[in-house]
Image 1: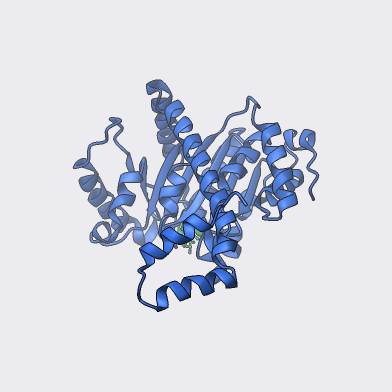
Image 2: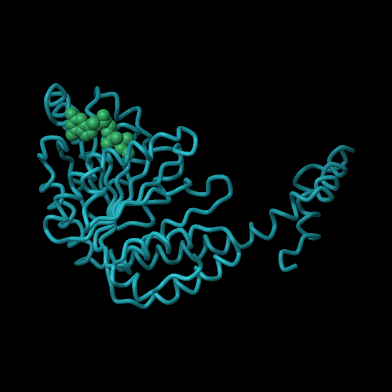
Length: 323
Ligand SMILES: Nc1nc2c(ncn2[C@@H]2O[C@H](COP(=O)(O)OP(=O)(O)O)[C@@H](O)[C@H]2O)c(=O)[nH]1
Ligand SMILES: [Mg+2]
């Protein structure tokens, strides 16, 4: 598994891509080294992709929407990769299976590739490799990369810094759904999509649409983009081509203003910082958690002569992450 045939990866072979992803997600030191080599080898390729995240609460209709939009795009000759990050999945266990069912047609399509992420972002100490996986998919010729994330905790903020466009999917609900929504999330959205605009929920979707339109009108973005607010039905396939048009417009808008280039560079800066933090943590953690260090910390605190702040200063002087 350490050896990934790069020429095969570049031809778009999905089995090789899957192996490459497993390699970059591995924590094994030997795999980490091989993964660094692989990422370096693909770093200068002149391939590009449009990266879109679809976020929203569980059950909002994200996976079904990705299936509909994904099929719309493969029919137009695009190659679509879908990455799903669900921090709740290791706990609930069921959602990865659920996503596969929701994206049944797309996952069977030769121009599509679907990969659930085994962990959430930084869950259980494991660093999520979504950025690396995006690059691997891009190197395999996938020109549209969609990332599905569940609206919990910090995931949205982290994903926002990995993509070009952030779509917020919301269910048709009562008007107070906006108040209930974590305020910051609305500000991240480049487009808001009210899902399930069909059958019995069609009217409610229209009401929800107006609620969001009203609340978005009050906000002014520094980049002058007004995030479109729209409805769609993934079941009846309405609103899907409009969604794609809006996304293309946004990409063109960012290209024209220079924001795309600026954002991508900023994302690389953040990525570099994350890698530095990760390396420091990896060195510090085993030392801090060693029984002798635990004992030392306990001793310093149990006498009551020292507070945690003083203890941390002493420990940091002793622990040199270089060794
Ligand atoms: N009527 C209707 N139901 C939908 C639509 N999209 C999703 N659903 C249903 O909403 C539920 C959650 O969908 P899913 O895509 O798994 O949501 P996710 O958790 O956000 O990925 C499922 O029962 C879907 O069948 C839609 O456009 N119309
Ligand atoms: Mg889903």
